Amino acid sequence: MAGGRHEGDLMRREAFPRGTVSALWLESTVLQGNLIGEPTERRIDVYVPADHDGRGLPLLVDLVGFTGGGPSHTNWKNFGENLPERLDRLIATGAMPPVVVALPDCYTKLGGNQYINSAALGRWDDFLLSEMVPLVEREFSCGGAGRRGCFGKSSGGYGAMVHALLHPDFWSAAADHSGDKAFELLFASDWPKVLRAIAKTENSIQKWLEAFFAATAVKVKDGDVHVLMDLAMCATYDPDPDAFMGVRLPVTIDTCEIIPERWANFVKWDPLTLVETHGEGLKRLKALYLDCGDEDQYNLVYGARRMHKRLDALGVPHIYEEFPDNHSSVDYRMDRSLPILANALL
Image (cartoon, rainbow, N blue to C red; front, side, top):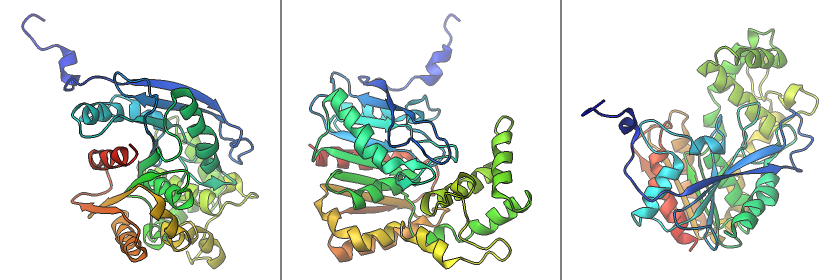
């Protein structure tokens, strides 16, 4: 239309030199035999800054939150930037040095995973360390010892913190945005909701999951996704090889009482538990960043504060920040964390 505004103008971002995103495909060996039949071929999107081929640059790995997959962060995004656009801006304006960023697809039928090894969901810790990162480093001649970092939000923040705790000789920097901690607070109100949900399917987790999967062709309800997430946590922290998709609950079906031996398997994976045995290793990191919104609706700010206090007591150098927001739509916090990681890995 002459003299009018073109439709494409509505989507135009401020122009910065544009990096490239390449897709790698990896046929995983370590994911073979997972109990839920999860596909072993995985896509990894890799961002390389403008005017670079990746050679000699640090490597950051994006661990996305629950219900997400790495390639979703390279999709077009309304009302904001996707991750490549954010990186283009931060690098072009000098806010951070150039880095390669890998975005692996770690999604599962149960909505995601926590980036640890699970007999039910698969060996995702091994996938990252022994397969995904080595592939990206070979293909782009980036990263390497002392030049790798990981970051994420929510379940991805949990993954970043746990990987930093368990593998400080592999990762040299980590950023945990609103990651899962203080499990007793995080799950306190969830188990009654799960029990009410499966009560509608004769208290059968299998029937509930089958009904959920059947409904995905029509409509997925937000409340059901939250129940799915709780069931996925069961298959992650306390998998039962004899149960449907490895899911068993840590509470009694009729009275919602904690089953001590089941709950103990959850708690041992709480970062606040792991820090007691692995906290010293965090001192090897070049950078450790964690933050959380002070109105986080999953009560994660209290776990973040506890972790901050414990890291201080252990003498672990780190940056801790709270911000006036909740758990949702806080990707803007990466403007703070990514420059810290990238500069530390130079």
